[in-house]
Amino acid sequence: MLVNGGRACINIANLGRKPYIPLSDYISKMMIDIGFNMRGEIIWNKAASASPSTAWGSWQSASNPTLRDVHEYILVFSKGDYKRPRLQKENTIQREEFMEWTKSIWTMNAESAKRVGHPAPFPIELPYRLIQLYSFKNDIVLDPFMGSGTTAIGALKSQRHYIGYEINNDYINLANERIYPYKVDSQLFA
Image 1 (tube, rainbow, N blue to C red):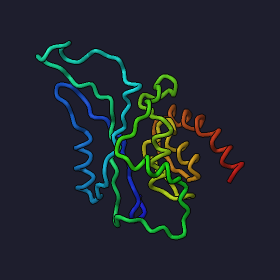
Image 2 (image 1 turned 180 degrees about the horizontal axis):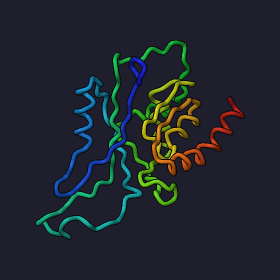
Image 3 (image 1 turned 30 degrees about the vertical axis):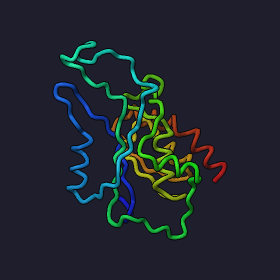
């Protein structure tokens, strides 16, 4: 469901302690196996908002220290050609944003699951940056796991259209509530 040269961006955290499960590696391999081109990965550094948990295996001991994950990955893939034709489409990213957002480490706070009402929220800034980097004004952004609607909000803020899929009715309602103010704004200024 991508245009030639279009991008697929997958936000993923690795899991577990015993054993540690490198989901980002597994997903990268699967995407390459089905014909996608790996374009890179962004490390989302959530350190400023990371839990102060002390569940580190062994406290101040070399017997079993466990790393605390304070990051997630955004895996970037494309389908078909590496370069997407511009075809008279308008970029909306500013020079300073482009210079900063093409760096492979992004530091921003995580979003509160309690505040958003979804177990795996992320800040609007995350999809907003990806949409600005990898799409043109009025493009369509597809989110196959819409959840609380954060990617749709990022699309609307970027002057893009969106299509989202979600199977949980509670999250559909939540997404609609969160998206509505941005849809009203985009209709006023379209």
